[in-house]
Structures are given as C-alpha cells and as structure tokens.
Image (cartoon, rainbow, N blue to C red):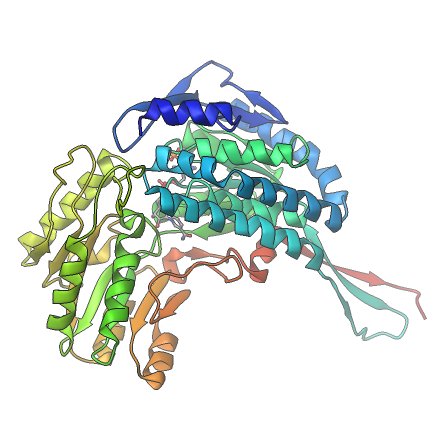
Length: 491
Ligand code: NAP
C-alpha cells in the first residue's frame, strides 16, 4: 500500500497528528524547525514533525507540573474510569493504529495489531490497579502513637521511548504513571512519533485533562538533558539502548531522580537433547524472527546440545527458508524491513565479523533482493560466544547457533554477558527446567516458550539490561513514593 493512501485514510480518522502536545495544545517547534519521518519499507517521506528542544521541553514540564496538583487529587476511581475510556478508544481504533505502526515502523500488519492489543492492555490493567494503591497500618512501639504508610505519586515523569514498539512502550509507562496520579512528558523516538501522537489524541478524547500527558520530540540529547536538569521532574523512565540508559542514569544523579531503565538484551535460547523438537523449532522462529529480530527479548544466541543439533538445524533451516519478506502491508509477510540503514549496516558487520572468525552461513547472510533495508532471514552456525555477534545485541533477523555438550556449559555460556533481560530453555525434564531457570541470570525466563510479555507479568532485566519492572502489580512501585506518618498523642 502506498504511503500516501495510508496517510489519507488515517487523516480522515483524525488520528494522524503531526505536532507536539504541550498543555493540551498541538504545537510546532518554536523556531519552526521540522524533521521528516520515513516509511522504512520504501523510503518515502510520511510527513514532518516538529524538531523541538530545550524551550519546548521546559514548557511541557511546566504544564505537567501545573496539572499534577489536580490530577493527583482526583480519586483513584476517577483516574481509573478515564484510563478505561482511553483503553476503549485504543481498541476501537485498533486497525488505524496498527496501520500507523506498520507505516512508520515497518512490522507486518498482523504484528502491529498485536502491538496495539498488547499496548492497550497496559491501560486496561493499570485502570484496574489504580484502585489498588493501598497503604498500610503498622504496629506502634509506643502506646500513644499510631503509624501509617501512605503511597503517593512521585510527581512529573519524563518517559523516553524507542522506535521498535512505538505504541506499546508509551502505554507501558504512561498507564501506571497516570494510574498513580503522576503526570508525564513523553519523548518518543524521532523515527516513529506518529503512534505516540495518535495515542495522545485518544487520551485527550478520553477526558485526560490538558497537561497531564505531553509529547515533545526532536533533539534527543537536548530534550533528555532538559528532563534530567529539571528539579520538577521526579522520575525518568526509559526504554532503549544500554548506552543511552547509562547516560540518563548518570544525569539523573544531579537531582536524585528515581530512574527505571528497560535496556538491551542478549537472549540465549537453549535447546537440550531432551527437548520437543517441534516446539523448539516453532518457538525459535517466533523468538528470533518476530519483529524482524528487533525486540529486546528476541533471541540473540541459539545454544543447541550436540545430540539434537543436526535434527534441529535441518528443521530450523527449512522453516526459516519459508519466511516471506516484504512490505508489512502485503498479505502473508512474516518479516518487514529493518528500521534504517544504520541498523542493516550493523547486522552486516556482525555477520561479516563472525564469518571472518570461522562461522558459516547456513541460510541467507546478505541483503534481500527486495533492496532498500530488507535483510534475508539468516542462520549462522559454528558461532563461538567470544564473537561480536554473540556479545552484542544483533537487533536483526540473524540467528547465530552455538553447539554445546553439557548443561553446565550451556548455563556458563548463557550467563557470560553483561545483559540479563530474557532467556529461553527447551527441555522435557522437569528437574532440569527448574534447575536451569534458577541458574539463569535473567529477569524473564521462558520454559518451552519462546516469547512472553503480558501486562500482568513483570517485565525487566538483571545486570546491565536495566532497573525496575514494567507491567504487573510491581509496575506501580516505580511511580510511587512511600510516606510514613506517625500520629502522636493518640493514647
Ligand atoms: P536508543 O537509541 O537508546 O533510543 C531510545 C530513545 O532514547 C529514543 O527516543 C531516542 O531518541 C532517545 N535518545 C537517544 N539519545 C538520547 C539522549 N542523549 N538523551 C535522551 N534521549 C535520547 O534506542 P533505540 O535504538 O531507539 O531502541 C533500541 C534499543 O531499545 C535496543 O537496545 C533494545 O533492546 C531496547 N529496548 C529495550 C526494551 C526493554 O523493555 N528492555 C524494549 C524495547 C527496546 P531519538 O530516537 O529521537 O534519537
């Protein structure tokens, strides 16, 4: 489908917003600067958005700060019902939002619909959890005192999100923030701002007051620094690369803000000899090639035990060869383009490095003949854990396979990384499934399961994959302060 046709359809639905949102008003950059956003499937310009910086971010922070007073004083029931309306609107506009995601991010339309449903589920879940921000009463050591624990919203939140889930990474942060009574300044990726803006439009329609949710985009370091420097911003929640996450964590120290970080992964996918081959092949396909390999929980290394190695490689290769690559709007496409030229060049360099050190291409291994930024679904064998492809996050459709002999060796290889987000293991041995799950230094473990992310489950990493958890009842904690009140003269 042509970019122009999709944009025309989205414009008629009122969801195609191309300006920033500050204090309830759609705003251009103050100096008029704009930046073009491209459709990664064909390189066409979708539209331009404002290239904002320090001044606009400061105003967005002030709006959020002013709105905090009233928003945080609403009853939890009131906030809950507005979030519920937002959820309903997101679901009513599922098709248009999915088209917007495919247009700016490139993923196949059915995966984009999956992202809308996943993204909306956080708003629904936190609409419910808003009513469960419970405090506590503690036994007092003194007869005439009473001790109470109160949970209160932290205040203004700066939320910085990446391009790979342009809608769901927004809702996963904004849902719990708003539920607790916080207000937010969102900075979506300049590569994919339209889904965030459409979600903001629906938030306004659902009765979320002006200033509670603001969106700025443009100069990432300037916007990031303005959020970090402001004493009014009490929390930064970030999803993105580990390198940027470290900078934000360091920058937040000056004003001692709370920080939540959802960073990069290096997921091992371990297949033991006693695994169900069919289950492992199906899961490896989803875990590696869904989203063109561009998710933080995507498999980065496939570890296969020697007894099942040949059978697995045979079945896996056949399955990978059948994956259809193309424009996400085309019927039957399983894999879209990468996000941009830099992303495909990184994939190429990791593959070349591996080959130069003795790895072998089993399937694919080069740019797809569709041209542009499409890459062939690829399998590489004879990979060693010291190679760059096993140490860095590939973020592309390349499956490096490492052969191992023993369970101890598999655990050692799996944990030999600074990352610790998601890991997967395949076995029919119940003792082994527990033993290995407990030994893996990862925040998310799948047993005979290749991808799992649900609104009810905590999502986050060990080690350099991040701090804090999103989703689930634990996802509220990062947006709350705990206050202890001691009442005297009560005897
Ligand atoms: P990125 O380059 O770190 O960008 C993420 C966000 O940070 C974007 O909005 C970006 O803005 C912004 N940014 C860049 N430099 C900044 C700075 N100096 N100050 C403030 N903000 C700055 O990451 P990405 O390439 O978009 O996303 C891919 C990464 O995200 C991967 O490593 C992936 O594993 C990780 N990820 C993690 C999770 C998780 O839950 N753990 C989920 C999804 C993705 P611009 O784009 O406008 O430059």
